[in-house]
Image 1: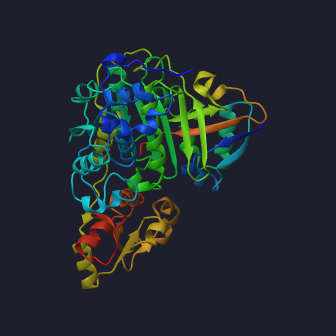
Image 2: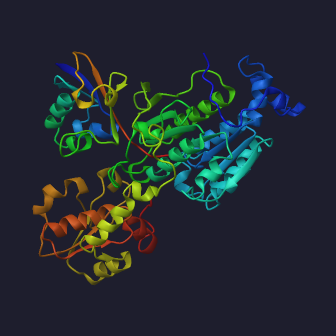
Image 3: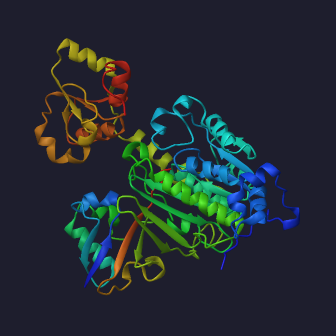
Length: 397
Length: 91
């Protein structure tokens, strides 16, 4: 039996928008599907779907929802297209690098289907604007890339009563579900609290297989279409795990947690400070309290090399990153192996530590300081800034 | 009692590259503890300092979230499967 989702904007068939002759031809493969038909296609045309994020997950979701004839797509994104996005964010092309993602997305989606109305929100989704934006739509597709925004989208969907079509990816694995329906569980029922900052690397740090958001984002689009049409068995109360390496899909049962502060006890009645909830403000405060990490710019380190200064340059990245790009003379000691290799370093010598952009090397500097090393500096901006400021022949990745 | 624990790829490298590990124990917590003892690098990713599950790592016994079936005290039988599902945020 089909599970239907009650949304405030459910419309009676006789008030659904009509299709033009061109639309009837365009959607013919839908119209001849008994479970979609003319009424289903008119439901799609009446539907308003909000995509939060026009990146890896948002790209395939937006492309397919536009092609399917969803009448109104809202897009929330404030980023510009970067060349490193193109490996997976198929909404954008090489010519779009440097353009706002919403401009690029609008061009592509309008080309795919000029009948779709696009509503652009070139802003960060925040506790101040989320409810106002989300209430204007029937359902939300969560294509965000960080924990604070995921909890924000979840809570706003619960409070506004809008289904949250969830997808999340890392490296070779993904998760998908449908949260915040009338009776179903929400994201907080699955993960009550986020991990502490730094424990789970982002895709920028840990990498992601380019086709994986294609798989998961397309599942999100499928779920959104099913919810709009009221057909099939949506992923309500189920968590889909996608393992690209093993070509395995598993679904696990998800239950509404009666003690969930969002959808269970409903003690959460307003949106909160999600940066604080995710420990990001606390982490910033801790860093202030921690010993100061002294930095040298790439130019200053290059000057030391040119002067013939005697110092050790330590690269704390992983071996596969070292294989992509390296600074001449640097010695590789991956961060995780640093504690057991401290005795190979000489506390009497000056040490400069680097990684890709400076985060891991700052942790390494702190670890060295804690172990009694006094003459330790972090290379500001890592090998990426070294490539910008000193040696452009070092590839950026 | 031997059961199977399924790890996500990201944690497999902390268990000698294995995606599935056999574990012994009468409860989910005992089995997770046994695996944590065998792979010390894995332990802090599975349980907190007190040996309890984190709120951002969900454990499934077969297809059920253990928080609704007794948590780490949930009894396991031969052949049961425990799946570790950590929170990820990439998009």
